[in-house]
Length: 531
Ligand code: AMP
Image (cartoon, rainbow, N blue to C red):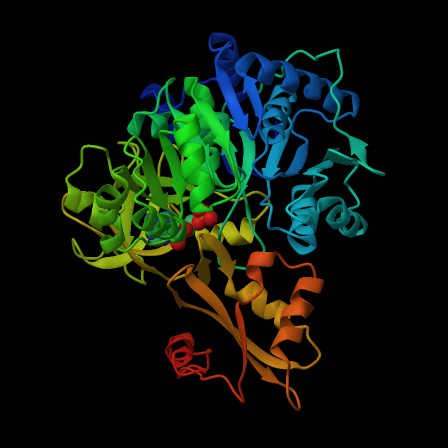
């Protein structure tokens, strides 16, 4: 049994089981069954590598043996920081085989985040690749180790150097049979307050999440999913993503690049039927498709993680010939989707309806009272795959969940009378940079450690390519402050690359509201006038 997480109250768990949301099967067992049922079909494609379901089962069994011989056991946490490579799937299945709990980091994380994830989760191991796209992850691991005393192993796919090699072993242990109501893996919150919080997702809830999104998007055994977003992110992992595709016997094509020419060629070569992208990537692809006259009529584009302007939504069919599904999703659970047979106006102008009939949503004012129908308020959610708390975070839980178990999303929405949701903004102080969430408070804290910085505020401003970019306003202590040096300083502190502000603007003071808070609205407005 894992401790320090918040299960659903018994009456809710009973209901979700009774009504069939929770199937009572461990995620690992479901995936192993799929590997048997679809043994000869292709599970994973990456460059020249093609793994059948049989290969995937065999490799993950051998890696499970390796992990077992390293004394990694059920409920042990393992931080996984891998890019979109086949080893990701092999490792995930291996960890589920032995009942260890993957903590899913993103490839953009660096020393600060990985150290936090290792210490906060009490991880016994960190799994990385040797190098990827110019980053030596072994070097990051070297920087992490002194701050993460519980870490017994750094497992490296590729050249392990002084760390532990990845090669499989022969004596495959019996699969662990966890209670399906227990956490299977941990996602990271894209939240507001500093470093990511850990979201324990249970076997029951995440299997439902993955399977039902596949069904909602009519993705079956003949489906081919292209993973563009990082596999460690909910969007490409379980919505339906890698897990949904594997559960139904489909094929997952892996890439980390978003270059239109490469992606279009890949979509054609592998006959991709579904992919999930953020709006900035969609815009890039649409522009390129228009220039080159590319049509991809068999492709369903699932677009979310940040707001997509309705004008762009309309161009998917017009330019690419493909179909669009907009979605709103949070690592904590709730997913809303536009369905394939929804009218165009719904697909272009809303983020759709909740996935489950048992999803409960409320739209409330700042005092927590429901707003009148159709008006804007904060979205709260509760349901069969929306968690009841973060891992090891009682204080955060008290702020982030209502007493009756609704998660406060921090997003401002309007619920239409037809049940479709429209996201209009957010309460949370987060910059949504091409779908990557940058908590302003965390970056500000790092800026304030710079000896020459007296005060700092980070805001998101509209950007035609990224959706939003981060601008840091800094008040220097004395004379001038070199913006480039400030960015370098943040990188050297080991902050994730996507959190380093796009611009650093020295100012003599920060505007304040009547109660003395930094006036971020004024700052955002002032950006337009900064040369
Ligand atoms: P994450 O947990 O990283 O997936 O981030 C969840 C957050 O992404 C939500 O709370 C929203 O702020 C944002 N988000 C997700 N989908 C959308 C969408 N379709 N439109 C606008 N914001 C979105």
